Amino acid sequence: MTGLFSHPEHSVDLVHLILLLGLSFFLGLAVEEVATEEKYRGPGGVRTFPVLSLAGLGLYLLDPAYVSAFSVGLLVLGLWLYAYFRSAMEQPVNRDPPTMVGSVSSLIAYMLGPMVIREPFWMSIALVVAAVFFLGARARLHHLAETVPINELLTAGKFLILTGIILPLLPKEAMIPYVPVSPYQVWKAVVVVSSLSYGSYLAQRFLSPRGSFFLEAVLGGFYSSTVATILLSKKGRVQTGGEKEINSAIILTNSLMYLRMILVLFLLTPSIADKLVWPLLILFLAGLSVAAMVYPRTPPGKGIDVPAEKIQPSTGNPLELNSAFLFAFSYVVISFLTHWVHGAFGHSGVYVLAGLVGVTDIIPFILSVAHHGSTLPVHVILVSTMVAASSNNIVKGIYLLVFWGRKSGLPALISLGGLSLAGMILIVVFRL
Image (tube, rainbow, N blue to C red; front, side):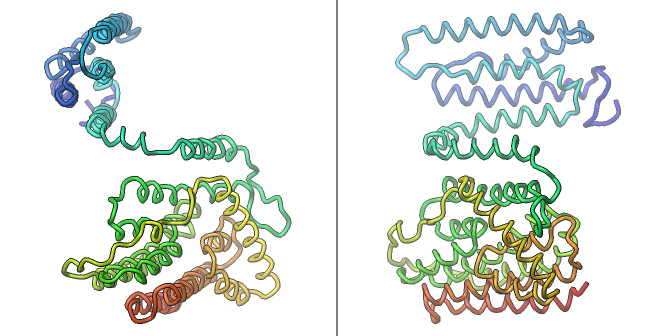
């Protein structure tokens, strides 16, 4: 035995048996809990599964080279489960028909024996834990399946096709004159940015508790800090009470912008991300600290209820093809502008462009200066990134003034200005 979590040989020892019995018993408990809640006895449980796993192990050891005995046992088990399930379906009972949870779990228990002695321990542990997780989360998963619209599933399917089939086929060399990025780089950026936004979108739509506007604002900020700032500012205007909580949420949602930038850079250009991670992380932690200080120490007083249509996000599914193509088009156009401006006006021109793009999504610009093969010095990339982020914070401060007002949103307004100023200071501190 080479170690607790690695067993290349097929010999059996006490550790194998303890792990096998423990995992099969754990799985049996979960299956019996499901049977108790659904008031229907299915095949297998805390007694059957350990015995079944031992049977699978014994049959496998009889012929480990050709697994003939194990295969025959698997066939017999499948026929027995089929007969059991068919018999249960034909019984006239006044309850829902039986599910296949017990039958599928029986197959997992049977296969655990060979897995424990053939594969690293983490594989069999992960298999059982995943199965138990899905068993325990069945009610929530059923509710999720009922609430997800079919058009969103179709959109995700289309995007998977473009990601898994189209992306590998795209050329990895730049093809458009004066655009230094390749089609593969452009679409890979679309995949990464859209996937991060989609995770936040799903959590915001299906997992965040209704009425918890603070959590929704945080998730929305990871989706788009600009959109979240506007929505929170509108909420602050129509709701009385809870101003500190709204200010704190605005500060936090804009701090998440820096964390989003770090993730995108690490996923797309890790070599450049290593150079930029500390200034961006410092700004994120600074914003997080200020948001915690602004957040009220006592529960805010009950304010006026806000109609749902006044605070719901107006953005659509980030995996919609229109959104993906729009991001790709923005990336190509901004890459062209960055390349042209740098050639015509040098580094100073790139800095000016960084300030101007603050009125839009800054991720395409950051990727245009920080892509693989970029000829810009690292310091120019750092300055451009900080200028774009600071400019974007200033623009969001203007939105806050327009949609909420100076007095109530003063803490958030000062914090946005402070983050912009801190970004400029860090340019000097981290001069590369």
